[in-house]
Length: 208
Image (cartoon, rainbow, N blue to C red; front, side, top):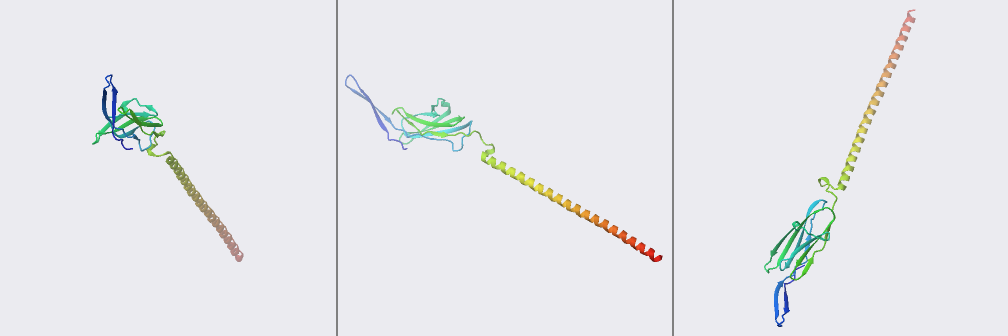
């Protein structure tokens, strides 16, 4: 909202002598203050700053902050600067720094004593996050990482099981082959012995 034009305040009171004493004072209305807070998420027990700006007023204003609807008494948390334009009107910038421990709402009021006017900003609110996630990783991302890790472990166990089963199957096949080979050799050996005995018997019969 733009600054209002400067106004002239006339103060006067009649005297017993019916003489009017007049006092002319120049005053200008300040624009409605605008408060800006941090753009990033606000975490519990962190220090954050809020900035209040208002322009186009005269004379120098008073700036008051309210936190959670209570007037701030500690001026050490506030830093206020003034600047003057070519028309002699003031712009005010006030910065409030607070350590937040829970959800916070903030308003800024610019007061012009000469006009007996107070202009208050819209209230801004911040919902505080319980704690910072380690290494900037959010809770949802942590869950995904855990699931991926579990999946990797399961896949690894499955691969190990397949390798073990293949090795056992190979050993079983080798054992069966060796058993068959050994049985075949025994069978051949017995057959050769029988053949030899038959031949010996035949030769003995011929000699007789």
